[in-house]
Length: 162
Image: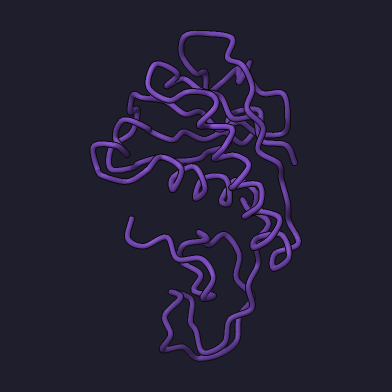
């Protein structure tokens, strides 16, 4: 999987800084995520074709998915998010200015959204002592899918509170 990263915050974040972060995140994916989940991807900085990101056309995508770094916010209560558009193509946003205002580096949200895009719809866990609600006070062992990565406590990824 190739995930195109598009810089729509270029007035505030230089491409050189993004390249440095992408090298670190690609190491994280290969060293920590892929060996455990058997899913991998490469984040690649691409040029933008317009002044604003497009959720529907995804014209900037040159891989299998796209993540936009954007200094605006288009949803409430999130530093970023990911979705699938009407054609089934995964995309996501990282709100760089909001991250700065909250005192968190934008790369933390980029890492989170990238890992969730890689695993979107593919991660399945076998969980003991659980129930339909996912509680630890369960009644059996169940196969579960569709959980967010941050809700799975494996000891190697901890995204903290939303």
